[in-house]
Image 1 (cartoon, rainbow, N blue to C red):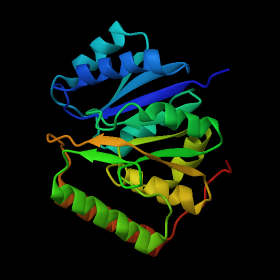
Image 2: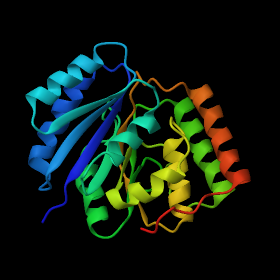
Image 3: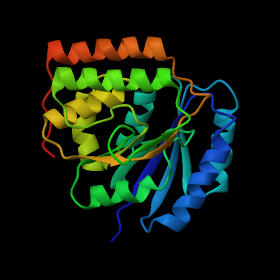
Image 4: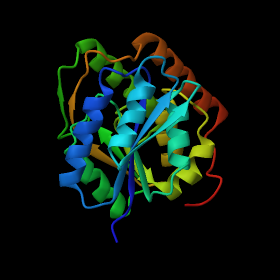
Length: 242
């Protein structure tokens, strides 16, 4: 029997992109995968029309649901969405759909074949990146080199907004991940790899969004502080075996 999949889209003030992105994802999933699926819009503190659009989409499509958090934090939104579901597989992608959706079947195949986590990578052989500025590319590569220098990790791209795992892994792993915001992705992968979970890197086609809300300098500094916290304080063991 095919495994149930949740595709979570974390959003904050995304009234301009949300409807088109959800409709695009819906149309793709209907034709591309055989798994039963659901799209979960995880709104963390939007102050524009995002909550209203989320409710409209959930009424219009049986495969779309929404949840609302009053406190901001992408990691917080993903944590609530992943731990609050009964789906077999949980995933997320950015609302701008920067990762080409052709990677979705590859992600599901990896999990169904025994991997614990599947991760999109823009930095491994076979990946293609379009429209990305030199500044963003340099910061991304430098950050991932820093992670490797500190932790000798094997995964290649901590920050690609395209990840999935089994729900059992999420239940075991998330209590060990402290960050509630942008460092959530990196911390999750470091903790997972150091606890010997099987991670599959998937090369993706990535088209950079010029309207990205990520503030590079402040986010990079918080990420570096997160890396130092893990390096100095140690990496926790999973609270329950997977």
